[in-house]
Amino acid sequence: MRSICRLVIVLVLCSTMSIKAQEQDSTKFSPHHFNRIQLDPELSLFMAIGDNFLKDAYDLKTGTGLTADFYLHKNWYIGTRFLNINTQVTRPENIGDIKKTKIFTFGIQGAYVYEFTERLYLDLIGGIGSTGYYHDSKFGTNFRDSATSIWGGPKISYRINNFFGIFLGSEFRRDFMNIEVSEQLDDYFGNANLLSIRAGVRFITH
Image (cartoon, rainbow, N blue to C red):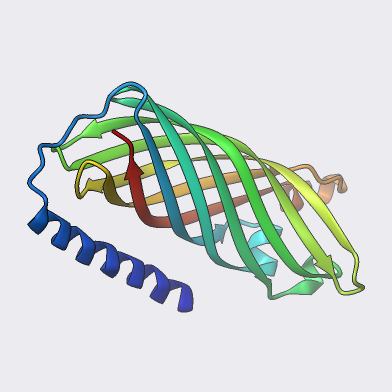
């Protein structure tokens, strides 16, 4: 519930800033072009889906992230992404002696950008990265599981002026876990599927 409230607060603040900026800004918008850079700090809400350990044993909390994208063309960009997902263990009997897990992802992504208006854009994003599941056990020991993650989804962005905007999006993600388990448990521990809602601000260069 707190995570939903935080996301709502972010959207309200962004909307307020958007209205004020529009009232003050009458600059002609410059179109996206080669070598433009954009930075997107974000707040995300995650939900695990399917029959797997992440769905059964964890409550996924708010995620925070940052992407840095470089435009190859007005309709295409590539970039890097960092993401942190906080979790709470709700059913430890499903995952052994783990009491807390933090999930970190770093990867690359690309997107096609469709322009509705000079202010409103749709980004269709796909990416791949390396993910670490960092566990704290009940006995004070720490260990790490690794995964390869792929993700994709749409993002609607709204430009307030030439240097600042806001965005809202959704995403499907699949983690292919590098965990050695018996064949009977491979489907359960071998992958994790996540859905997310993302919101944040966008900083744009020249």
